[in-house]
Length: 312
Image 1 (cartoon, rainbow, N blue to C red):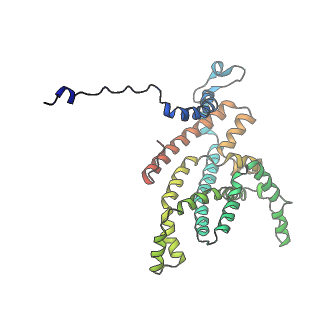
Image 2: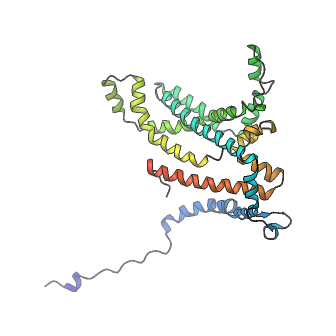
Image 3: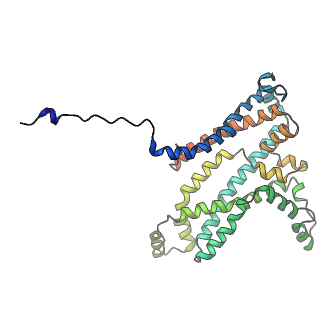
């Protein structure tokens, strides 16, 4: 006879380890970054309280006068507020549009080259400006576009009058948008070229058999292959719609072009630190951060819906 007790004997379950020793080393690697994030990004959030006070550094956060939403009302009633928002949106939207179109077109052209060596050299050259800060590039562009710069010397040589590019409200925005596109399109090109490596070569062979020329292969095979990547990068860029590039504009603008070049970030810096209106600057920055957080949430929702991209 079969020993039923032995047959149905259940082995005792092993107790789970209190500490996950397998992943402990990875957690320890993350610890320095978490500490830095907490010290420099989380603790400073206490400064948000300044937006609701008439903050006086000598009195601190807890003894300064509480004024509620007064600074937010003042911000809305200011005649410059609409102009600053308009400047921010125009610059940011055109940067986003060109930041998508130019890398896509350039990556499609580069993908058609047969010489791998030449392709790598071009790819490296266009990517190099991405690593340069706007402190350096701003100084270079200021010298190149000044009245005595290279561009105006060329204009004089062909009979045109010199143009004060960075002192003209007509020229400042286009220069900001084009120089930013020049600096950053190399990074986008690498992303799209990486996406193109996943295209099945059999699709090109089938297109050739069907009589498709090079442009038709590019339009009907190559471009559709990177559409998901284009959608993903476009939706993720929506979160930066209120960030038109503080470091670039701060290093290149001047009071003459405040009408078309002053954005939210430069205005916050000027009011909060240069004019020492800490509470008002904090109020403007807080409102901008709240709107940006909503836009980032929207962008990740759209990315997960249309491109199946998730970070959690």
